[in-house]
Amino acid sequence: MLLAMNYLIISDTHLGPQFDKPVCDFLTELIQQYDQVIIVGDLWEGYLWRFDDFVKSPWSGLFPLLKQKQATYIHGNHDHQGFVDERVKLFSDSSLNEFTLNHNQTTYHFEHGHKYHLTQDLLFKVPLLPWSIQSLIFRANLVITDLNLRQTSEDRNVFNGNEDANILIKKLIRPTIAEETWYVCGHTHFPELDTEQRFANSGRIRRGYGSYLTLTEQGLQLHTTQI
Image (cartoon, rainbow, N blue to C red; front, side):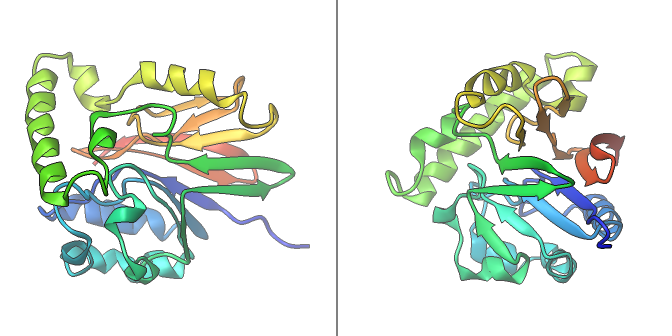
């Protein structure tokens, strides 16, 4: 009898030019505990630095471990296919825009989620504008976002996510996938496990906060913690 694989599902780490050792240590310890890893987009921050710099950075210390865990890498809106090259093979066995997995007689469909919830950066996506212009626009948007966060509640700062976006995605996905299929995404940064609608969002791992999903014989589970 074959044993069921235990999967770790992460997204929205937005690994950037400033190396964050506590986050790296957290990811290392977490990844080591599971058989395989599914990255549901926005692994690295493609609007702040180029892929060449990312693969040569200290974050590359995670690559052998991700490769050992046969990572599946799903592109997000901040690390889309226009930003990467064949070196995605350094940390993943496959890179794609969506992925379907059958596990314990249940079907799970994985996407980043941005095609159902548009954000400002999608308006300036390659090849419409040069990367330098896209990056400048994104940096300006970051300043505005940080100013808004300072005016929000403590809980909102912890989650730094958009619950309304999850509601919108749940509304839009059902005409596109089978009712019995789970839809698993990231993108909104708001962690959620909705068993009634078979919807799961892995949230984020950044800014001192970590949320992620696991898929085991017990099904999907959501985990949240401080880093």
